[in-house]
Length: 527
Image (cartoon, rainbow, N blue to C red; front, side, top):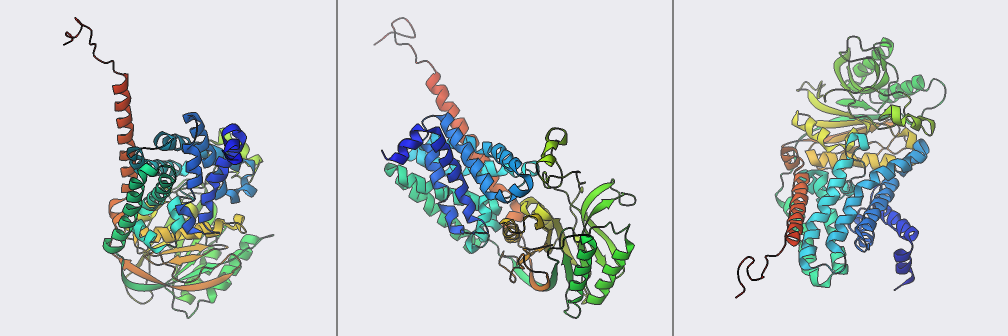
């Protein structure tokens, strides 16, 4: 036995540290490192550790600590804002992986049989998917850092996303990791492991060959205005002035739509009609509607919504606001509201948690953008900030007829971290899932645009840029399998786990049943 193995077996502190470190490894597959290929082996150390646990309780602890390490690594850029509360949140969410650790030990402990290995190849990825599903709830932080999202620049993976969304990509990535573990620990069960790898390649190849592809039917010219960092006194007024100046650079460039980033307007336009008139003048000069994002308190009168602070996408044409407005529905926990504020309100004293809860919108909106060339309107579906992480929202907008998906975002609080690149990459997966181009327009970078297949439609606007850039964006028609059938990989994973649990219960009940007596006179004579 090696020294390291002895330490892991004897010292719970060494083992706990190893579990947290192993769980953190998959973060390297996401931007900024973006080692996408590493995702296919990154879970192996964590899985090997959990399967070797002496007891199920130890396996659950390995799963929990690994989950803590993963969540902390993927969200480490929150530390300057939430401080120690980041660790608390990571620890709470990490507990979701405790049953996954037990599942690993249940199927792969010791020397797995071929049957156990085959079961592990479908159950372990399904268990991982259940963790991703549960933590994707907005109140738990949303679907940031789903393993499948790490494959945002891999063309075959994007094709898989068009079939089963990010869920199918996550499922197959974990399947590859599981097959590698089986190859390492069970020589007698190598046949199922190889079969699992072959099946993964076959599914990817089938998706590449037969899945419907987006049919390009035109192009639109969309301009992104990225103001860049503006701080100090009267920063809201000065940011607006800069955005106005940058937008004027678009005059004569034949754009169809101008998009400003999240919180690009810090004043309620009904209270500041002078700003609305200035944006309308920009629309006339450029010859295109301007989509701004208003982050301000409004009275609620005349809007059909209650008073409070909203983040709203507002479309403004040459005659002023068009009436098209989308109020952000899914808010960032602690950043825009504090869940159970009466219980967790103390978070505002240890970090930059929201001092006041923002108000929520009630429905998604598809907006009609006027076509300056005299054609029909361009239908766009806006999202705000981390709503671009939710695949169900872009799917709904596509079903409602959106031709272009738009996300207005700002990661200015995390400007020098991995967050801007991570956020920008999500739009590629959303575009591939829906077969619709997606524009990710930010206040301070990274801004990015992707075509209907998830490929980049131009270079990123980095965090150092303060610019207006025009993107030629291909539009497409047709429906992807994901838009048509939704989250079917999740339903399949639930079915697998239910069948496995039922089979396990049946096996236990048979073992617990007493054998028929063979004594003479009881239940028949012995012959």
